[in-house]
Amino acid sequence: MPVTVVRFNLVEPGATPASLGARYRAAVEMAAYADDRGITTVQTEEHHGAANNWLPSPFAFAGAVFGATRRLAVTVSAVIGPLHDPLRLAEDIAVLDLLSGGRLVTVAGIGYRPEEYALFDVEWKRRGRLQDELLETVLRAWTGEEFAYRGRTVRVTPRPYTQPHPLLLVGGSSTAAARRAARLGLPFFPSAHLPELAAYYKEQLTEYGTEGWTMMPAAETPLLHLAEDPDRAWARCGGHFLHEARTYASWQSDGIRSAVRSAATTVDELRAEGVYRIVTPDECLALGLDTYVLHPLSGGMPVDEGWRSLHLFCENVLPRLEGPSTAGLPAPAQGERATRAAARLGQ
Image 1 (cartoon, rainbow, N blue to C red):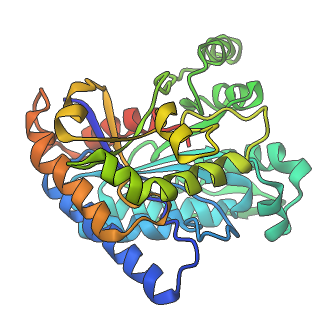
Image 2 (cartoon, helix red, strand yellow):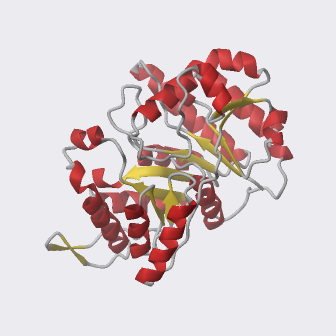
């Protein structure tokens, strides 16, 4: 059965505390509804100081989702590693791994916005070294044994549920990221369809004598919204999609690669481009995708519009997808399917 993903970044330009609180609660309710109907994964992400309220705390949100669900996995794609205290991050992930029974998937990247580093007074030029330290530290911390850290001996508890450690992938679009993943024997998550980078990662595995695997995004990763009348939905929601697309594109330099980056500057261009797609249930099924990524609250769209999209997919598309249901799969199997989904997001 294809992997099915519901993505949330909780963007809402001009939000009030009341409206944003309602959006957060709606997202958790949507996750519970999706879980009941066999959706594979909820995907979320991390950005800081965004004027449109882009979600800054993906692990807190993941905890709320785990509390409302039983089967689906949550993929954090990606956590900006150098902005986190390594020991505290190891604790947070371990607790979520225990709470969820192994349903958390974490992709660790270094980000691409210097202003986020400035917000937390973290030196941008040290981001590579900080990422190395963070990854090495969390892997040691999850053993539950004492180890040397910044000149002192520390021990982190509790140990996580998943052994030898929770699923952790290294994300990025650079050779440095691929080399870092290979050195540590961690899976590599290219941020876009980059076969040459995957080949380099494989070479580095041989060089370091480690084992790993690549989760490669598909060459095309549409973000889907379902509607009975796509023209009407574009008229109502196209501005929300464009706002999100333009915001995301404005953060990235020419050297950054992403599977969901848009170059559109108008709603018409966005619709023609195909990164964001509004389709009917029949059109959605006809896409024949390996992964279906729903984005029901994109760009601050009305919550009721997001519910309509999710209902149309779960009631009119999901039952018609070929293959066995994910319902009842043990948590490790859910996590594996979630990882495959995460690889196609590249955000």
